[in-house]
Amino acid sequence: MRHALVFGATGQIGFPLLGRLQGDGWRVTAISRTAHADEPGLHWLRGEAGAMPVVPARVDAIFSCGPLDGFAQWYAGSSVECPRVIAFGSTSVEVKRGSADADERDIARRLREGEELVFATAQRREAAATLLRPTLIYGAGRDATLTRIAQLARRWGYFPLPRGANGLRQPVHADDLASAAFACAAAPATHGQTYALPGGETLTYRDMVARVLACLTPPPKLIELPSPLFNAALFAAQLTGRATGLGEAAVRRMRSDLAFDITPAQRDFAYAPRAFRPRAQMFEPRQEES
Image (cartoon, rainbow, N blue to C red):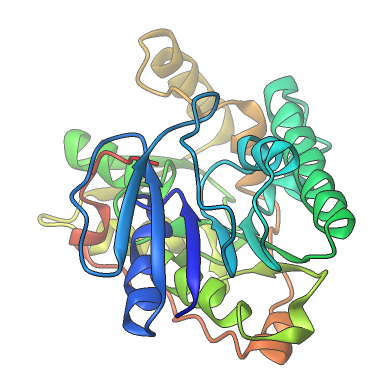
């Protein structure tokens, strides 16, 4: 029986991945910050970055569905024997590397260094590594973008956007990312490769937000403001703590195209993500574990 070690096993990607592995007959060791009861074929370990539990000496595959930098450091320092490693990063490694925001540049740097460390460690151990870079994740109520938008819109009864927020986006469902990781495990063409994982539809930022609002009950109103008025409203919201995580660089990206090529993932492991058809329950906030 094949044995998988899964990091971030209770997160928005890790949890559906567990189901796919179990359904395919894998024995799974899953790591979480909180205690969970074992099930047939599923053993839980409690741990987190800096306080990792003792893991099996050998597994057939490692899946990292949590923060890449922490996993990369653990992997480099571990002694686990494993021929196959699949780890999630983010397209932010490209999107944020030239950001005017120092914190965003730091995120891109840590992602890049994490990717490099995973590949270097795998090469040293003669293992096959694959890095997966999702775009804008949604679907499990645990993302920091669309769920946050839905939460604020419900509270206010409206959601403001600057006029011209027409940059292209490709929101991707968390379940499709779990399927992608599962498919990669059996696809030799993915060894040593990095893939962008966009969603199955490309649409403007404005239309993406409009679809989120339309699925809520009652549907909040989308208000488009001239840039000076929007910037003033954003500044006021930041002062009162109502716009945490939304800085000038993030607003500027609303007008920038952040679209990625799906072709390599389609070719190498038949990646087929769904179109963006949001439902209200996808944006019910849930606490994430890892």
